Image: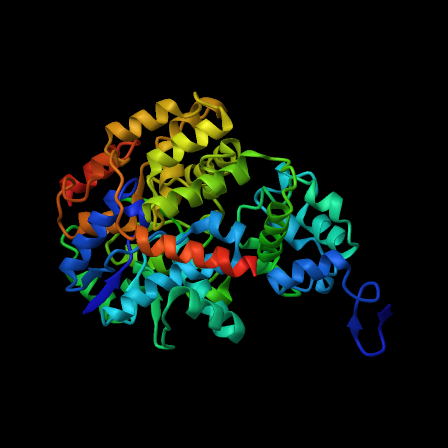
Length: 190
Length: 291
């Protein structure tokens, strides 16, 4: 219903089921979006997306869960906060994109850009093991999982020569980080 | 003055020169930085892309250790860590139920007096600015620089609470006190694509090309940055960008703390200027010799 008399614009009669799931994670009500497209015009990565951020929000409003989860758009969100900063309705789009990523990963949806969730997993297991990120280890794990061995090898070697990559890992903070990771996991299983 | 210090993973590896130059300039300003004992990673993009709880718990865990060390103010030089620290505090503040869960996870609590500062914020205080201008031995007149703030230092404004979110000026003001000319340009807060550095490199190359092009077109001799992720993309990928797009930039990317150090008379060795892929440049060497 669109009620103009009391000046509240609400699309449809409430949040779609998918919109509710997104809200439960992000606390963001996507129905506040009135499709002005300011997010899409400011987004530095929209050129590479299959749906613009504005279109993705619309799809969430309409409850098009499959279209959304099978899109590239949310994986390609750079989390730069431009959309969140500029939205006239104060819709925190970057949070919505995070929520969709979380829903996709929890439901084991086959990602349109598989390397990105693989990178997240490699990064977090590296964090759990070392406490501070051990870049060389991270790159090796990521390469093994994506089977792309040649990419950026020259760059990596040059960084090692410049002393920009640590050869040996540190384990400082590892215990505390691992504790936090396992407590979060336990809480989320509840 | 004494602050807790959270360098973050990058400043111990890819951005050692930022760590060294920040410590050296703070020393000269009488600011003492005490590293948080056994700090751990803030989780960055992978954490907030996987779990909302984790994204807040990792920074807050570090803040709890800091508090036990007797500090309530921390300096965080990486914009990405900074943004996660600020956002964790903001979320916990605005959602009491989340706060209870987080307190349980990090096994501690935190006061409302906790402050998280980027070094730029620290140096922008009037008392520091006047100290900085007194310490400036070499007036770097003739050097034209664009200040690149990146996306997360000032955004989103309700969380960052620092400078203007679209057209910040704090780094410009700071560098101008050293005699440097800072130029107006359009890419101050544009994104460099940091979170795709390993996965979607093409995006990084395109975004960084736009930034480099913007800097070159206004006639900059160098780009000043305050984030290790912006730095690594603009510096180490510059040659690749030039090759792919058939352009020529040769734009040195310098941490604003290195420029401060140069002006304070510190040696390029102390500031680790040699660590960059793109050489500091003829113009800067000229200025350093004559100033």
